[in-house]
Image 1 (cartoon, rainbow, N blue to C red):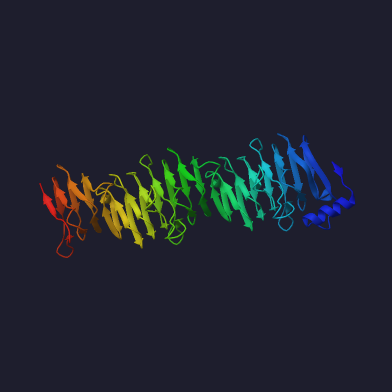
Image 2 (image 1 turned 45 degrees about the horizontal axis):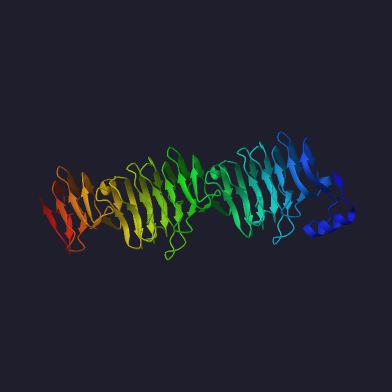
Length: 451
C-alpha cells in the first residue's frame, strides 16, 4: 500500500468531512493475503476497486474510516470481511456527498463468515451504479449488527438474492431512495431492522421458499408468491404495505400470521380512495392460519383480486381479524370451500363486507357485517352447507341441490334484495329458529321455493 502526500490527505479529508485524520492510505486491487486496516492508517481511500480474494479476510479496526471517492470503485468481498466497530467508536464507510454518493460494500455470493459490527454506511450506493446500495449482501453466512445507513443513493441495504443473512439493530436515515431492498426470503433472520423493507429481487414476481417476516415494516415491490410446499411466517406487529393494485401476496403454500391481541399484523394499502392489492390463499395452499390481523385499504374493485383477503383453500383458518375500508370487499371466498373464520369484524368497506360462495359460511362463527352469498355467477348451487348466526344477503339465485341439506342457525337473517334472486330448494332446508331467536327471511325480494 502507498501513503499519499500530506496535501492530498488534507484535500480528501475536507472533501469527506473527516478532518483531523493523522494519515491517509490509498487502496486498490486484490487482497490475496489476510489484511488488517488499522486506525493508524485511517482514512483508507479507494483509488480503484478493492477485492478480498476468496479464502482471505480483511479486518477493519474500530474507528477506521473508509472513503469511496466515486461510484466506480467498490469494496468487493469474495472472502470474509470482519468489521470490528464498537459502540461509540464505529467503522465508517463514506462517500463524498448525498448528491454524489460513493460506491458500495459488496459481500459477493462466494464470500463466507463476514461479520460487520457497529458500522456507518454514509452517502454510498448511487442508483446509476451497478452496485447501488451502501451494503449489498449476496451471502447467507453474513452477520450485520448495530449498523446505520445514512443518505445512501438508491438503498442503504440490498439483498438481491434468496439468502438469509443475520441483520440486527439496523437504522436508516435520510436516504434519497429506499431504506432497504431485499429478496422476500431475506428478512428471515432480521431483528429490530428499522425503516421500510422493500420486498423485491429484480423481477416483477418473486417466489418465496421457507421464509419469515419478523416485526418490521415491509412494502411489496412486486408480486410475492409463496411456493407450493413452502411456508411464510409473519411475526406479531409486522406491517405489510401494498403500494398499488398490481402487486399481491399470493400463497400457493402456507401462510402463518402470528398476530396477537394488542399487537396485530397489518396488511395495508395507501388509502380508501387508492386501495392496494390483496392477500390471496390460492386453491393449492394448505394449512394457512391467520391470527389477529388487520386488512386495511386493500382490494380494489378494478383489480383481478378484489378483496382484502381472498380464500380459495378449504383448510384456511382466519381468527380475530378486521377488514376496514377495503375497495370491493373485505373478505372473499369465490369457490366452494369451507374455511374456518371466527371473530371477524368489518368497517366501512366499499361494495361488500364479505362476498362468499353459499357453501363457505359452514365453519364461520361470530362473523360480523353483511355476508353476500355469491360464487362468481348469479346462480350458485349449494351442496351440504350451514349458515350460522349472521346476516346474509343473496347475490344471485341460490339452489340447494337434490340430496343436499342447507341448515340455517337460530338468529340468522337472510336478505332478499330484489325480486330476481330466490332460494331454490331441491334438497332439504332446515331453518332451526327458536322462540327467542328466530330465523328471519327479509325482502323486499324473491322467496323460498321447494321442488
